[in-house]
Image (tube, rainbow, N blue to C red; front, side, top):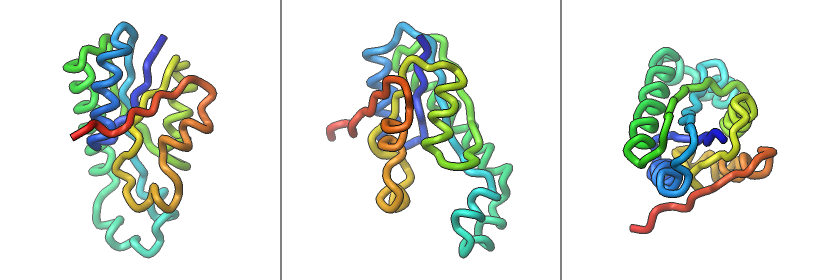
Length: 148
């Protein structure tokens, strides 16, 4: 069994890691952070092109790799074993990339928070966790926000 945890640095994704650490700690774990390459962002947000080009693509990938590493460190601290991490480029949609990675590694379960950093985009397009739940052909655990 391999656990795939989607991590974007949000409070909900942190709560998902903590939950997985308490309840699923006996299995290898892969922390995945999905990032959008510049060309994908330009296709999605053509009016924002000048601002997007100013922020180099290498910087986006580096930030995603740092986020994935941070998620892996949180997973180890939460008690998960045999933790690895990956920053994966999104070429179509974040949810599809998560499902594709889960298929690639034959994950036994996908763990994600109920809300991430997508903000307004998730309201307009539907949440990543909702799409993962409905398109993954494997068990999916959506962890609600931690109580304050």
